[in-house]
Amino acid sequence: MQAQMLQTRPKPAWPRELLILAFDHRGSFKQKLLGFPEPLSPEQLQKAIDLKTMIYEGFQKAIQMGVPKHKAGMLLDEEMGEKNLKDAKTKGYTVICPAEKSGQDEFDFEYENWKDHIRQIDATFCKVLVRYNPESDSKLNARQAARLKELGAFLKSIGKLYLIEPLVPATDSQLKQLGGDKAKYDSELRPKLMVEMMRELQDFGVEPDVWKLEGVDRPQDAQALVNQARFGGRNAGIVTLGRGESKEKVAEWLKVGAHIEGINGFAIGRTIFMDALKGFLEGKLSRQQAVQKIASTYKEFVDLWESERKK
Image (cartoon, rainbow, N blue to C red; front, top):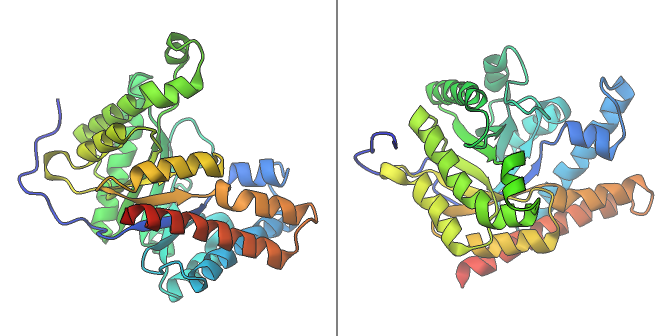
């Protein structure tokens, strides 16, 4: 049963659009992009930090090129981005920092003293990624929901905003039902499971300010997600994540979401920065060219979103 309905719909904690350049990738960034095994040497870590700085420079350049500063957001991790996070705060950018341990099947905190780290970074939003399929392991889901609820209560107590990125990976049995067709899972089954996932977390007392959700192909599915985010008078927003998909696929998702009131923007990462960084590492692009490519690609998505929003 859905949690007790809220009597009045509050004003949204974040009332404006949120167009996020996401570069908080950690395990995949170090291992897949750079080929560095854990733990990194000081020299390897510095190389990773330098690449994250290039993305940050691309973010700033995009704002200089016309991306609205009041809508732009940057999602960056503490390990490879602490210096840039601090710099971004001084410049008045909307800053989002993750709290979850990277690459884990079960959500847990990156640091044992996670509350101290959240206070120290002092970001606009705290973000967590969680893998949660309502038809999967119920005990696993309950453990994760308890941590999400604890985090939400802490963030509320210190006046910070809460962004949750709940992925809904297919179970083996769900894929089997669809003949192993992952595309069919994404288009037909995942949207329904996403709504159920949101409902279960709300029932447990998890109340983010913004849901960072996988894209859907059909407007009716996007509307169902908004309806659940707003159920019972809630006014949480939704941003569509890129999931490392092609520019064409991400553009399709944005075109769907831009026309749905309650979907407030996007959070795109690898689709924006990966080709540029690979080109730089392979010597095909100069540092300046790679930064420009990141800025231009980010601005392309912002321009697409804003043009669709006006239709």
